[in-house]
Structure formats: C-alpha cells, structure tokens
Amino acid sequence: MGDGSFQPIETIIPGAQVATLQGMRTVTKTMRIGKRKCWKVQLVGKSILISENHRVLTTFSWLSPVELTKNSWKEVPLVVLDRIASGKRVRLSRFFYSHPYSGESLLPVEKVRTQWALLTSGGEEEVHDLTVAEANHYITAGGLVCQNCYDEASHFSRSQFRFIA
Image (tube, rainbow, N blue to C red; front, side, top):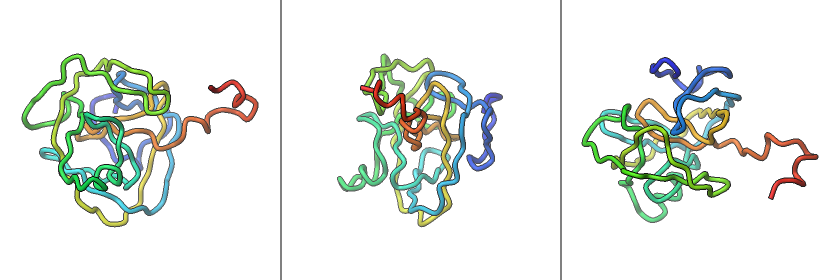
C-alpha cells in the first residue's frame, strides 16, 4: 500500500495506492473473479496464492503458472521488488521489462532482483484482481510482480477501438 503496509487484495478499494515497478500508483478498479484453480508461489519467507492464468514477471517474460508448469518447471526465476522480498540478494542491473500488451521495453524505477520460487498446486480458491492507473501490474506483499488480469482494452469505448493499432 502507499504507506508501505500490506493488506489482502479483497480489502483494497479504488483510490488506494499500491506499489508497482513504476512507483506508487492508484487502484482504479477491483474485481471479485470467483473460484479458480490456484497455484501457491513459495518465495523465501512468504507464500502467495495466484490463479492458474495470472501472469507474473519472470526473468523470461510475463508467464502464468499454467505456462510455467507445462514445461515441467516447478522452480522458476521470478522478478521481485528488492525492498520487500527476503532471502539471498541477486540484484538485476539495468533490468528492463516488457509491457505485456504493447511489448514496450520499460525501465523500472524500483530496484528488483531475481528470486527462485517453488510452484505447487493451491487447490480451488476465491480470487480477486485489480487494475492500476498508469501501470499494468502491481506488487504483492512478498514482492511478486503480478500482471493485471483485467484486459486493458475494456477501458476503451467502442468508438475508440478504431484508433487502437
């Protein structure tokens, strides 16, 4: 959150400030998605449940647990926010990440590093998501960088679609 604290995603409301790789940004919308198959992402000192199609930032690209585990990967190198995550520090110098929709190369204003995470089945759970102004992602309590699942195209009116390349 904007004050450096953490709270469950289901309690976050529009107008709240959340951490992104581009600094603090405002939550514009929150959504209760419903029950979905989940995966547990085990980071050093923290485990986080995400839905099977929720993409996270890896050292390769934005990938979901389904995409990662179809290659039989159970341990994956994730990009995490350095000031939040714990464990061995392997900082990424001059790290750029791609905008998941446009492919634009972006330089984070926050320091990040890699951290290996273990993926295990998390069963079926109620999941939530949010959208963030001027960012396509948000950062969880464990430092995990999660992509907004909500399609950015839905923010455009029908008349604006003809201008989208």
